[in-house]
Image (cartoon, rainbow over all chains, first blue to last red; front, side):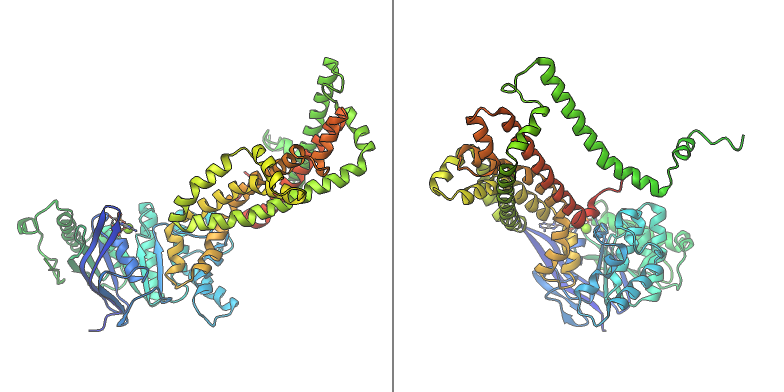
Length: 279
Length: 278
Ligand SMILES: Nc1ncnc2c1ncn2[C@@H]1O[C@H](COP(=O)(O)OP(=O)(O)OP(=O)(O)O)[C@@H](O)[C@H]1O
Ligand SMILES: [Mg+2]
């Protein structure tokens, strides 16, 4: 089975002044090429740490991260990242912010071609006409759109999203979910999305991974069958409600607020999906 | 009814303020307003002296200044230039050294912890006490001594601002570039440096004034016949009070010129950090 992202038995601890702080413990996640995996889990359980390991910004103490079967030992230009904080550079226009990665990664593109690529992405996320604006002239949602364009401009194989919509209001967030689907239709990438929003996870991902409390391991994996074009209405079906219930329950277990053996309150897996508990 | 302009728009129309005119108004405001303020200041000063009947050895009045400038004009040009270049050189050294120290402290926590107390202590020492030490240390090297004091007094805010600017860089900024395999140098040029520029220029504005104080301190406390400070000192020994005041005004003028040069540089290199006028 070939997976584009293959995280195998990753264990990691931060060295702090009060001794080592174990954050990840034998975590394994695999994402097929073109796949979209959402990772949810209790606050502070190590989700951002996971993204830094995938990006090669850190090397795990034990286990390994493989991209295309190749072991990740340092950052690589085939990765794109977007965070909750859009971190746009105020001294650059939106267009130049999006072009930034193309100034770093090796590329044969000429300046004009770089601009064309950036403009195409900006128009894809609905930011035509804002190319020459400064980041501070845009709303929070628009900045996050620009940040997504920057993460994708160099055609990365892997897109890492660390709660990119976490700071947005509910309506803007739902708009951006739709934008995410459009981007997925137009561009090819394999994605890992960290989120706190369970509805977001089942709306965007093919698979939702629930992490346990710190030190985190993959506690539960919920496949979300691809239904083709997803609309917001699908979030209000009985099937969606069941999935959300399963995830909610798993989060409660991860937080230690519910017993894993407490099968009575655990809802049955939704019809048509092969939910499997790993613990 | 319809052709009566609303009270809000009427004055605008009466003044004929189009979009282009607004810009002219802003310009004339930024030029005329400060000049008017200076004139008002001079008038109040003159009135104050006149009302109290102070002789010029208590307090010179603005009307005493033109004769003072007229009789010493050549000296003012020569000494003003000496003060100016030594200040600028001291400031330039402070920028190079301050940025270097700021970078070291900004990038390394250990160095920050190690150097900070040293720097603060160094800055806390009154420079007036350092002047005689320096003058004895490098006897006769007047230009060097003066530049040294100007540098010593002005590098602190630059070092601190650069180190704070660099150390408060959000990790995400670094990660965005680092995850693409960018080198530390690239991260510095593309992100850390530009992001620190507003803080740097804020500190430079303070440093400019401080460097002036440093130069004059050396010129006055350890007189060696150079710079506006020396001219001030000769005014003192000759009881030429209008000359002393004329020197003060000349110093203020040079300070203002340097300050606005820094402001112009800031507009050019860090103009993006300015809030657009509302
Ligand atoms: N550089 C670091 N040094 C030491 N400890 C760290 C470091 N970064 C994170 N931690 C700790 O490791 C744990 C996991 O951090 P991480 O940011 O990965 O969690 P998270 O799941 O992303 O949290 P959140 O849901 O709040 O975003 C936290 O307890 C955090 O305090
Ligand atoms: Mg996080």
